[in-house]
Length: 290
Image 1 (cartoon, rainbow, N blue to C red):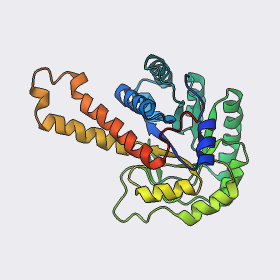
Image 2 (cartoon, helix red, strand yellow):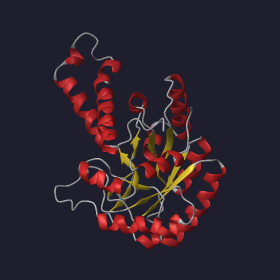
Image 3 (cartoon, helix red, strand yellow):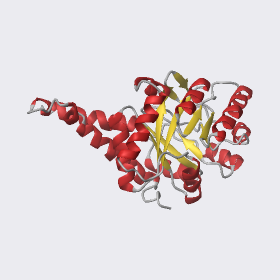
Image 4 (cartoon, helix red, strand yellow):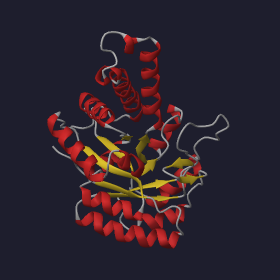
């Protein structure tokens, strides 16, 4: 099938009241594990790439080439979108040029006027190439590549202003944060989500910081119009725990256990386990063929 934009898969998710997972990739193992599990579960999937992760992997061009080649060589037939996560204005243009099929422009730290101006320009550039675009209103709490947000709740009127520009899906802050949730976290603001949904209508909404939100809250958010849930930290924690176990059990000292293919195998499997667990909650298993 090759890579696709995220527009159709999220329209279907919105209509079908389920969520599509965006799982961030950090290297070859991450990418391979997520693709294989999505194929196994017959589920659409979005591969998220932050600008920091892209830089680590030597640039957008390298990432796009790796993902396209892997989709082909692994014979992946489920819909896969390659998505820039929290892109800057310049980063969005660079990822678009490199062949990403979906772009997020995070203009939440600008004034609403500047956010609108830049988003409008990028909508035209993306749609000219058949690429989907996500915008953001109200910053997501925590830190993502140096952008720090306190978890502001988005203004529904501002959400409508951005939605009217023709974006394909919208990230709206509803008290969610990146990283590990603190013990005193107040939970998702469902009244705000409901108000945003009323203003934006059929537009799919995005829940950032999807790792660690209680399953029932995630399901409720999907019921209120969230169609895309972003997961990164959870996969990292699964990977870290499995790798730690392998080393603490001394398996890296047995035979050729130090071989990176063996050393990284438990973590790679753990990522698949994490993806399956999240997809079960999101309700997207078996939806690729629909």
